[in-house]
Image 1 (cartoon, one colour):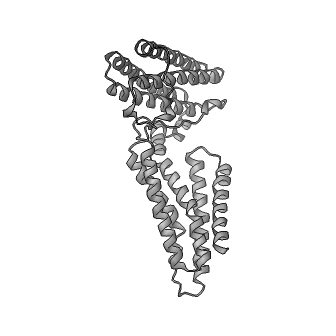
Image 2 (image 1 turned 135 degrees about the vertical axis):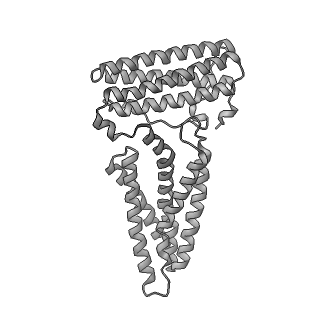
Image 3 (image 1 turned 45 degrees about the horizontal axis):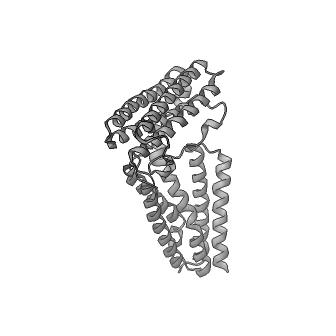
Length: 323
């Protein structure tokens, strides 16, 4: 993958052309979906789609004048900093609040992209065009916010935290949840394998401690290096990395700490393992709840994915340790 700072002007324009084309098609899909439920809002999205199409044409014209007819094959997935988007436009009868959130995400990312690209570009004509597009994207973001004031009921508005909730999820919940899932699940196998292989609480604790800290360091760096946050709006990479690494370590330590029960106590191994099992159960249910509450995952689906996966990893560790 390339860093944004390494992109050439040709690659920047190619990315912008692809993004405008995608936004135009998505806004057209939203307009079609809302044509009966919110006809006036659908008209707004149709007009936004037309604006995106004009942006596409202006960018394409500039590109052809500068670099010829063949676009660079670079895509968003080839550049660090872009957030992976869920294909919500494939769902019919989306709630207006969810559509507005998607538009805000797109326009915020578009504004950040054009602002950073204009600052990085040397060619005066390209720089001017990118700066103008950044201003337009900022205006579209305001339009998305106005949709809530005009069409959302007070009850619906109260349930939605709008941009603050979105930023909170992007900057804190997502990296924290990823770390908690990894720490709670991935450390189960080595911990319980050591437990059932040695039946020694202190040795098991050391294995769990090492696995938890090692996983925390690894996940922290992986999160920090995955996205600089300047385009996606996900905030400081080192903040996200710290959150992810800390939650990974906490997730692993949760079921490791019970093995501090001294070996000298009667039935120490059974006591520690029983407590650790209860902690694992609580951890997996907490993860399932967070996924359902913040990540729009149906609760039963989240429970199935997390609890089943955790149980499989747990049993794998027990079987290996008992062999």
